[in-house]
Length: 192
Ligand code: HEM
Ligand code: HEM
Image (cartoon, rainbow, N blue to C red; front, side, top):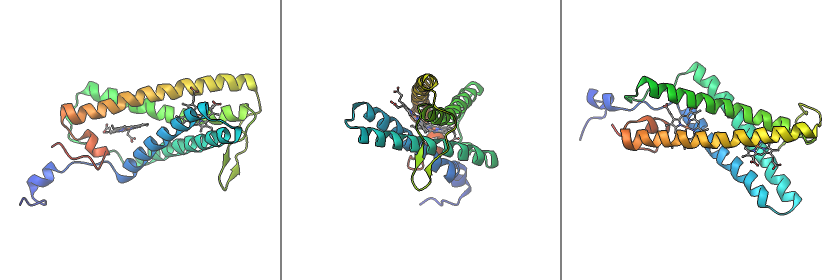
């Protein structure tokens, strides 16, 4: 049996991203899936009570996504991501950085637009145990309409970028056969 502490084994050991980054990444993925599902379910749901409940949970998940993005950025500032042994070109690194940067911009912008949209509609964002958050803006239904349009458009842009991002991660794993995905997904076996 090979010795896992041997120099050869440690040279093969893959660099995983810090646990906090990995946990926040997959919690964000889950929250985004739920936030999309609930708001789309609302389109077909019957009854004001159910519809209001679905939207309220959508708002809470949206705020959680924003807070997780702030936490991730602060954490990354203190502790850099691991560098999995991938032979990536400079252009690929730039493309990845651009997509990650844009994902962060959307993860921060969407919750703010959602809050503004809710208040401009004349509603309050209510959180369990904390009650209603103070409104950021006064009621303005015209503005609410354009904020809703922006919120929807950017949310679908996020969905498109996520598809591209996930396809790139799977391409690294299956086509390039490197550990870019394994570094972020501890349940995925190393390819090296
Ligand atoms: C990253 C976080 C978020 C994502 C991905 C997201 C996504 C979405 C999507 C896909 C829609 C449906 C758009 C459409 O009809 O085409 C929507 C609608 C909406 N979102 Fe969000 N949202 C987020 C955060 C928030 C937050 C934090 C709030 C409020 C605090 C919020 C409030 C709303 C409201 C009020 C609507 C309109 C629902 C309606 O009247 O049909 N969202 N959101
Ligand atoms: C809602 C969906 C997703 C969002 C918003 C998202 C966002 C991000 C962001 C912002 C990063 C940059 C690193 C960080 O700060 O954590 C990242 C990294 C990463 N994500 Fe995602 N992600 C999503 C879904 C996925 C999925 C479905 C996969 C796998 C199929 C995936 C695989 C990865 C990998 C492998 C990295 C590390 C990339 C590298 O080392 O350069 N992500 N993700």
